[in-house]
Image (cartoon, rainbow, N blue to C red):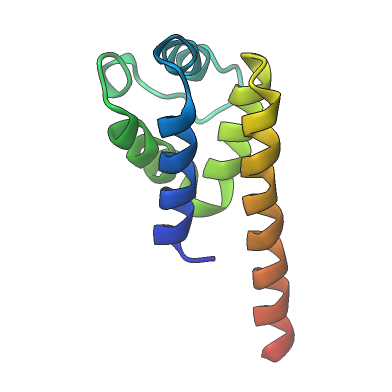
Length: 102
């Protein structure tokens, strides 16, 4: 799955979140214990698309979906986490197919 598709999947998920859940997501992202940490200035007051870009630039395409799923579960948005998790599963399948071809 290309980085553009990953960004689109994350951005689409954010569009489906209520404002309250999106604020909770940003809060959890700021207080995430594992590294790399995200600076407050990169998160506070940022739009859904900006947070999508922060996720991908901080955690790479490979990690962004996993971190988003983790944060969604933290804020009890399990349905959204499951949907995005399917995207990660497809990403892993595509990577395996690509490796097998080489």
